[in-house]
Length: 192
Image 1 (tube, rainbow, N blue to C red):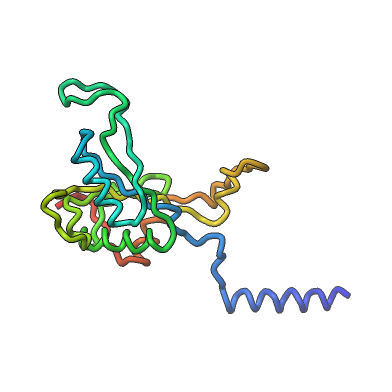
Image 2: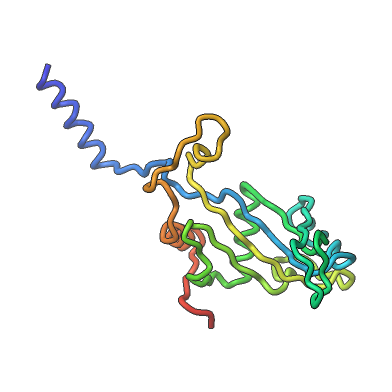
């Protein structure tokens, strides 16, 4: 029996060396893309900004309220001052590609967090391919991308929660390598 076991082990080892398959659980993916337009005031400008997000994503935006009253900026507590949309799946990849095209596929290394997520902003929403509407105006927006791996749900699910091991957590370097391979983005040390 022992020689047969060694033969099978040798065969398995030879296959593993020849193929060198990637572990599908280690692949990075975009969990969600959050688009945020912070207007700084409630009213007509905020509803027009929400309309811009709705035309871009085909989803209804959620309004964010201020936490504090700041008299100098004439902002009251619990006043809606911004709107955001969370996009997932294939649509998130499409919108991220449009945003990176506006940034000319250049990001700063400081845009990446230690947990592997990254974000950037654009000055004008019309650069994304949305037609300019004089009645709505021009808005800048923030892109924030949350990265994940298959199996991260283990830490968040309600039943049988477990810790995600250190080797499975996403680092800053993992995300930077992923975005360079997937979108051919060049990373800069400082803004030009």
